[in-house]
Length: 244
Image 1 (cartoon, one colour):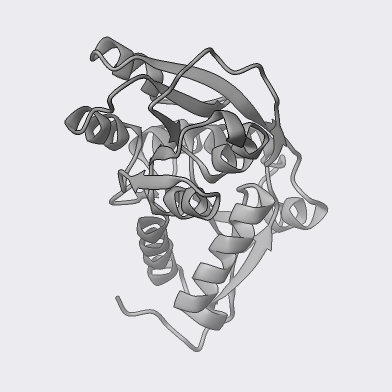
Image 2 (cartoon, rainbow, N blue to C red):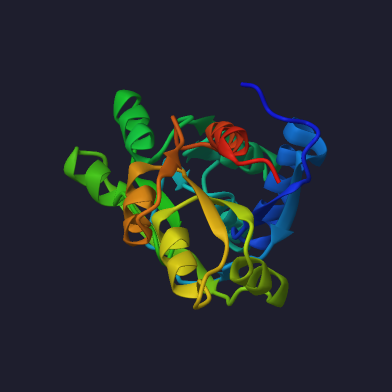
């Protein structure tokens, strides 16, 4: 992919929670160097919850986000060591927390398929967020793998920062990668009126892209629902951006 290196840095608005946005900004810097200027404005802030866990015993736990792993620290003594994880980053976090992690390297559909292909010798527990997609526990339970769930964190909405709101209000290209349908909904809601920016959007999935359809803009959809594919999608936005 040919990318101009002599152009002014393109702003890329990162709306994931702070930690994830900073990590993705580092990844983008490693790949694209000074071609991009990250603007971090989280639209969600993780809040850990401490519910009473469903009665066990459980043969394994399920994590569908790094935040789920972080929130599990409060319950670690009650949890088994085996952990099924949706992707590589979540699996890395789980291993660092002392779990024997297995990664499905995909999305909720891939995770369900991986567990069904290698079912555990007992029930599972999905430690999930309040707002989640895929109904992992329901699908597995209907497939004969009893799976309970516990909501252990919530992503509380946040407004755009003043810097991000100003960026979106004035003319100029702004790249915006969105990592979930909920992120896309929050972004639409947060857009200033009028929006002066020339938005160039990337979505992690067709479902996230569909949320953005009211904007009437072309959306680059990642080939896979993971961070590496989103880096590729951002690269396609850079290549298509007009010269300054």
